[in-house]
Image (tube, rainbow, N blue to C red):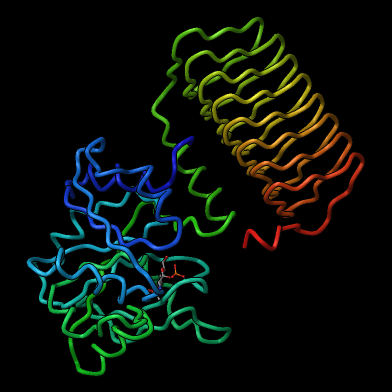
Length: 358
Ligand SMILES: CC(=O)N[C@H]1[C@@H](OP(=O)(O)O)O[C@H](CO)[C@@H](O)[C@@H]1O
C-alpha cells in the first residue's frame, strides 16, 4: 500500500487512542526512526529505546521500563499490521485482575505461534511456543499482543535475553500468577514472511473505501473499475484495464493493452510497458516492467528492472535493485534479492539470495 508497515501500525495505534508510544529497536533502527520521527506527524509521541544486544521479547521491554513503570501498558509487535480494537483490549485488562492479558485468535494452523489453553473464565493454564507436530493442543494462537501490569518488571531480569512466551509466562504460571486470555476478532497479521505480507496487503486493499484519483490522471479508452487509490500524475495508455482494488503511487506510467488485476499495489515512478499483466502483486517504487511480461502474486522491490517477455510466477519475491533480462521465467515461490543480474532467457527455479545481505 506504498507505506512502511510500521506506519500503518502507528496510525492504527493513534486511531485507537494510544498516543504515548515506546519503540524498542535494534534491527533496521535508522529506517524505523526515519519513517516515524518523534511521532508528531501521526499525532502521537514516540520514544526510542535501543537494544545493543539481543534481549528477547520480554528483555527488550524490561529495557524500556523507565517509560512504562507507572501504569498498565499494551505491547504489540513492530511487524504487526491489524485493525483490532486495541482500546477494548486495554479496557478489558484494566477490569480484570491478571498480571498479563494475552490477545488470542482462533487460527487454522497455529504452528508458527504460541498457543494457549484457556478456561471459561479466560484464565490461561497452559502455553506453548511454536508447537511441534503432535503438540498442537489448541488453535488459540497468541497474537503477541500483551496487556501488562507494571509488576511484570519484577519478574524480568535486566540486560539478559528473556522471552515472554518461553520464559515469563511459564515462570508466572509456575507461581500461580494469573495470565488471562482475550479472544479477539478482526484482521491481524505479523508480516514476517512473504506469505503473511501478501495476506496483510490483501485485507488492507479489501478495505479501500472507494475510488480516489489525484490530479493530472491521463487515460484513453481504458477500462477502470474501482475501488482505486491513484496518486498524482499517473497515466494509463489505450485499451488497458485496471480492476480494483488497486493502489498506485505518483508519476507511474502504464502502457497500452495492460491488465492490472485486483489486489495490486504499485508504487511511485514505475513504468509498466505494453501488453503486460500484473495480478495480485505488490510493486514498490522505481520499478520497470517490460513489454509482454507478467507478474502474478509477486512482490517486486524498489529499483528492479524486468525486461520483455518475462514471467514472474505466483509467490515470487524479487528486488531491490535486481535486473531480470528479457525472456526469463522466475518460477513460483522463488526469491531473488538484492542487486542480482539474471541473464536473458533464464529459467530460475531456486531462490538466489546474496549471502552478504542476510
Ligand atoms: C517468544 C514470543 O514472544 N513469541 C511470540 C512472537 O513470535 P515471533 O516468532 O517472535 O514473532 O509473536 C507471535 C505472534 O506474532 C506469538 O504467537 C509468539 O508467541
